[in-house]
Image (cartoon, rainbow, N blue to C red; front, side, top):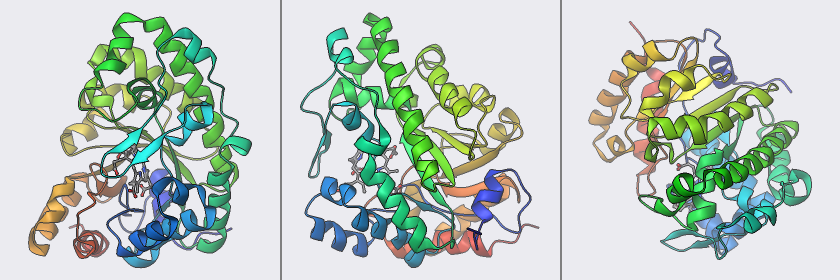
Length: 342
Ligand code: CP3
């Protein structure tokens, strides 16, 4: 299938393009009234994520409504723990909750390596539908959580500011943590490969909690597993987004990935110097979208200028916040599309 708009993919692969592509992390979600309508019909988040026709519909909504240059499959990073035998619930206004958590060697032995075709068939089916319905309009991004971020939820059992229970395992039972991380990594690699088999054009690894680790812990407990994923995925480009891990940029720059995501704490020019020969993605503060259109235009242009005209995929520095006005999101997208580098 020839893509009509392959700007995103060409930029990810390090090719020279006519303009900067743009999409938003968490674009398939609560900012759109059209999403909320489908979500209401589904009743709850997990039903929506597990109903391929509905998941496909909300995946395509931002392409039609916002005009982004890529779609991202509607799902969640927490489908991997569930496929390994640790189901989650999504508590309204609170977030994810795992009734069972991982505490012992026995708990880890009881987990299985996910088999994507049987355990995550609903995501793969949604990808099939999205590919058919997109019909080559824009590329489709697949994704998974980084093993460390997934460990955080499996051990902590819910969201947390500190993830102190998860970090406690790194300090007090490091061997146990490594066993769990390896099992998550094996599951994640086969899951990402299955997404690619079904048509994902690029896969992004979200290390959302990278920033809570010390540089040394990051090298020990997160990077080696992300490296295994990057080395294993040779079929499509890979994006690594390690939120808050400004201290790991040099190391991430050495991974066999094509794109590195930046958050807004990371200086753009400094990041360019640290991360050579890769496309960078990001990094506007999502809070900029609470400002006036004038202010959004000005911040977006400043960001585009700092990144330069090539090897950049415009995005926010983290997911778009649910209470953002879709018109402000459109202003961001249109500013990127209209920008002429001098
Ligand atoms: O980017 C997209 O549009 C695709 C969909 C997507 C979701 N979650 C849908 C979702 C993606 C890529 C994710 C990834 C994800 N999920 C991450 C990594 C990215 C990041 O933000 O750091 C993390 C940490 C999670 C875990 C998670 N899922 C949390 C903590 C929560 C609750 C808080 C919140 O943001 O709502 C979720 C729920 C979730 N995942 C929703 C959506 C649209 C909201 C559920 C709802 O509709 O009520």
